[in-house]
Length: 314
Image (cartoon, rainbow, N blue to C red; front, side):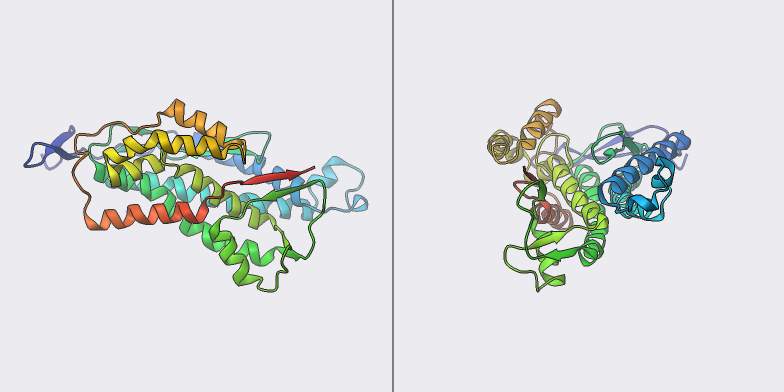
């Protein structure tokens, strides 16, 4: 037989498992379900983008709901938000999926989560059927999503900021202020150097899609449990991640006094597990290439994170 028909664990010279030889995983199943969820998410996110950003004059609507939702400005604004957002989310999850396939891990295609409120989606995820056997696999799978998603989010952000309109004075009431992560600030100053002190940008729908992509990347890279950031930091630092996880959770709770949404994510971390599960090769260092990839993920987290993502001025 040229292929193992079952998983064989690889043990290093020191007796520590360092990986596994696996059979080829089966081809993707129920592709229709993944496409259906993607299509529904396209509808819900397009509706959000259109309702939030479209400027359709009343006389152009023809006095009907159908006239509104079929108006080119309505559809165009919706797609200008939904298409780049779903592209970022899809590439992120496909990064995880392809890393799983590289290690012969049985994983599903991305499941998108459409919802009829908020921005129209709770994001997407893949399901991995089977354990990861080493920190090398953990790093490869955990880092692939944020890296791939960030590579796509940057050009989307570039286009979105270029299409956004500078304003010298913000409205004094009834406005949502979106926190600017470092990547956003750097590109905004590069593209709009004339932006006045105290001024801001009216975000184009594509710009908001990119902003949300950066925000989602930062959330995924929080250094807890089974989040991507938990995988990456555990692969990089081993038991140090387990020691620092509770103090870092306390920092997240403290940030909740600035933006209450962090309290929700503290609860998510508690439910998923704050400390990363122990792995047999915890004390085995990564190779230089994987260490570089891990540090790149931490740099991406720094570029995408903002302490107060959303603030409402009533």
